[in-house]
Amino acid sequence: MLRCIHLKKSFSQRSYSLASHLKNPDLLKVDALINGKWIAGDETFTVKNPASLEPIAEVSSTSLEDINSAINAASDSFISFGASVPRHRADLLTNFYELMMENIEDLAKLVTLENGKPLADAIGEVKYSASFLKWFGEEAPRLYGDTIPSTTGSSRILTMRQPVGVVGILTPWNFPSAMITRKLGAAIAAGCTAVIKPASETPLSALALGHLSQLAGFPAGVVNIVPSSPKQTAEVGKLFCTNPKIQKVSFTGSTRVGKILVEQSSGTLKRLSMELGGNAPFIVFEDADIDKAVQGAMACKFRSSGQTCVCANRLYVHEKVYDEFAAKLVAEVKKTILGRGLDEGVTHGPLIHKKALEKVKEHVNDALSKGASILVGGSEASHLGPAFHELTVLSDVTGDMLAAQEETFGPLAPLIKFSSEDEVLKMANNSEVGLAGYFYSQDYARVFRVGEALQVGMVGVNTGVISEAAMPFGGVKESGFGREGSKYGVEEYTNIKTLVIGGV
Image (cartoon, rainbow, N blue to C red; front, side, top):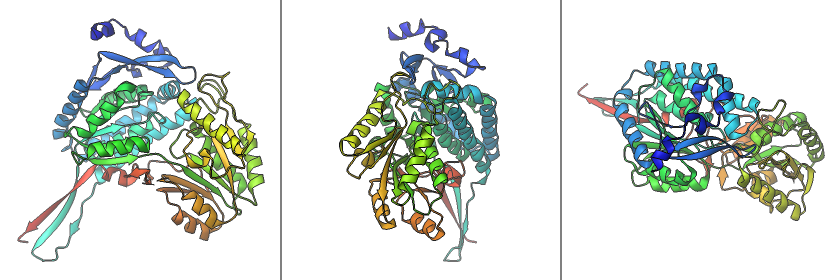
């Protein structure tokens, strides 16, 4: 009965005329991509614009039966694709990159409409997203092995890298395009096939990439995309972790969910990459270039309205420069424009949904109740829409406040005063997670000393922007394991095979 009702809805009814925003309406897909075909599901779920909570599309919620079909298709296609010439895979990724760049404006509009970030930021994300395809296209032919001298002298030891097989990819909503290509590009370069489950909030960017992968020449079954409703997300994750045909799962999301996926994968001993939660410290030492530190904080803390896993979350400022830094940061925040992402001049958009807004409000109210003060912002901006919050800077924040203990994932900058290097390192490392960290100093002995002492996977020194395709991305402690991007990102999708050749 559900299938009959679903099929009566036309494409325009399911996309709410969203295609009218695009120069290339073919990029708008609302069904699953399985084995080279677009498959409509029995049920749909609604994708909403975070700026207004208005529906923008009804997307198929892929059934578990159809997801198993996608896994089988990926397994079948791996037989030939895994043995393909690396240069062929490089050409496919290059084609994919060029198609993304040709459609950059439309892809960015999809990101803005389903994620909420301003169009300029969305264009930046699409460029960043495409860069992974280019990078991994260049890495595909360079999966080298080694020749190892034997200790016995009667044999030769050779190693080679081979693709792990079918990869299950689970991506978040905050970078709906880039988090796919960062994983998929590496998988394809290694010779793997993939089944991708995008975030329920932001499936349209993923499905557009699926369409471009077809135009790029990827064989049927190599790239499969299976959107699903929020209520089905946990089931899909469990299926990825327990299906023996999936040899690796790559997940970006919360530490809580990551732990569940690790446990569920134990029965099949899958390869895993886990890019989990962060709580990044941002340290301004007394010898820092304050103007550069302020610009770094703006880029690092407030990018995407604070909704990135590497956002600065705890801003530690030396007591000698605290007042100067705070005043200059407030002045920069006052220059920003909050609004809907497609409106001209807007620099910052809404939070992804009301639940995210409530967490920001909780952290602000908790800090105020314990003695913090508002320097700028501090309130929700309901006149703009249901999920907007002002960019906010708090002073006199202390370690017992939620904003200093938890990842806010919103536009809140808590300023915490410190007096010594040892003191701030102790505070910065007092966290169960360790994804990214930042600090500003012009003392190069301190650059190495503090850079090595911070218990994180990535450190930005005198910069608030660290992510690029050439950099190994990943964390330590409960921020997960594995690296994405860089030459190490491809290796995550390979197994080392050893040949021992006797009688030589």
